Length: 422
Ligand code: PLP
Image (cartoon, rainbow, N blue to C red; front, side, top):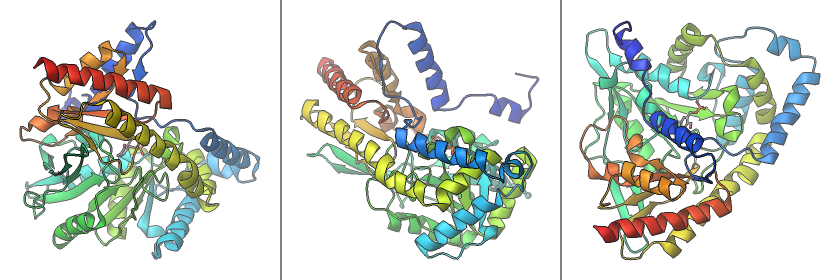
């Protein structure tokens, strides 16, 4: 559109999975009579206990004396003071930190943290040098594809594959022989646990990345949208990693509050200040109502408890179903590999040497009533050609047990036929 600026053009495009979601919506609308097993959503399931928790704290807010001062006025850009207190207290106690107010920023969802950081630290520096936004392990969250106003600033790296062939399992690892973090790096960003793969980078891997970035004062943003203490969607042992140049980023979305838009950035004061100013200019602050009920849920400890007792087991058990049905119904002699399910709300399947593309597989699966997300949308910033990009699909763990089981059986049948035909 010639009426738009470069930024206007850039921001008026749908990136990655958003384009596919449109196709899925159209498919569902055009085939109203047909029962689809929809294994595409990234929206968390509304669990009754979680809904009840937010209802309870909403009622408390409504009947409390502070209602007017919370909801009927603007607040600090940095966030609602009581929420900042609650996060600082919780993290200091839980992880033995000494966070103060200056280390914390509340944002309208965590996606906005990545937008601020990508454009404050990535893009063209004052001297004209291009500062890169480095995604150290591709595939990663599709939303990173849209966070920068300068598309050429985004770069991601092909991972190493740790394959257990006989078990049909694999795991991605950062490839440190390729990864470049140096004076041209503006910031580093990755999700842990990872959407779409369920990968949890090890503590050693995280520290290695942070140590590569430290000499250049490069912020490392660790997207913990699925991490502990809430929503605690890690199925394997993991602890958050903190450090001078690490910004620990959290989201309340997967803990049942996606619509209220609450993200939390925890890090060095100097970095937090930059992000806060960006936020002031862009949108002033996050919803005060959401922040107020989040305060109550965090300060009481109820959110962290519900996360480990209800939210985590719910999805972990869904992953077990994916695994067991695939083990049962996928042909043993085909090169299929399920990514180790270490967290998040997705399973990630790699079909090595798949005779058709992931997009074509998505179309074939639609014909048997199963909707998944083709994997190629999860490689933002990856510039090299890599056949693997077109050999993966993402399977959401948000469907019912029966739907997931039936979906996996149909998938196995379709996949077997595709390999057979070639
Ligand atoms: N990061 C990851 C890895 C996600 O999966 C999502 C949402 O799906 C987000 C960030 C954005 O979440 P929020 O709702 O906090 O903006």
